[in-house]
Image (cartoon, rainbow, N blue to C red):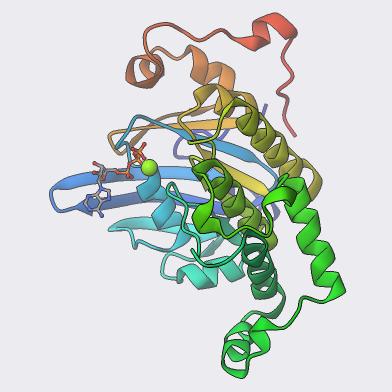
Length: 287
Ligand SMILES: Nc1ncnc2c1ncn2[C@@H]1O[C@H](COP(=O)(O)OP(=O)(O)OP(=O)(O)O)[C@@H](O)[C@H]1O
Ligand SMILES: [Mg+2]
């Protein structure tokens, strides 16, 4: 079993094993409030890593630091072993980082499909998109190849029936799927998901979880998943981090997290949730 112990980020290994994304000693203060206190977290290549913690623990703040929206007061962020602490969000996106937001951040007047097409063009053509906006090229019809890529992503998220609808009229659950679709269209190496299943019903949650597993397994995209659905996190992730009042109180494999008294006291409640490993055998092995 591969575990990432606190204070031993993955980039401590040989250069080839550098984490795709890593925070070390990250501290953020909002006035007198210490929102993050020397936090370490690593997302190794191909890994699915979970981040859980009560409301206000600092999860979204850590996402803001990792994605370049917030500069930490102390600590470092690295991608592939390279320091990106001072790199902009756009520069990190170009290096293969994509994210979704806790509250979907979509363009009201555009359709579902438009969102995916635009993200695909940004990936393929980078700054050329800005030139298109001036020359009018930005509104050209998608090419056949573009159509094919976009259709594949829309299909994988089961958004076919909604693809021509403007996102402003869609329920929250559908908006979350659009956010994930848009993020995937940028061809990320690491995808940060901030509560992707909140607002989804049971069926949508199961579908999204299956899609994310495919994205990870088939395309090798590393995932960092913030979720209040703890069972989803424990079932999907090989390493789970537990944040409490800005401090990373535990890091380990799901079985360890599930049975940890401090984690249960801080977050899971007094009753230990049932452990599927006791019933159906332990499937979670190292990759
Ligand atoms: N821009 C800000 N200015 C001041 N305080 C902030 C700011 N952003 C977050 N905080 C505070 O920092 C702490 C961590 O907030 P954060 O949103 O990161 O928590 P979270 O773990 O994502 O919570 P939730 O599960 O509710 O989404 C909270 O006490 C929050 O009120
Ligand atoms: Mg949050």
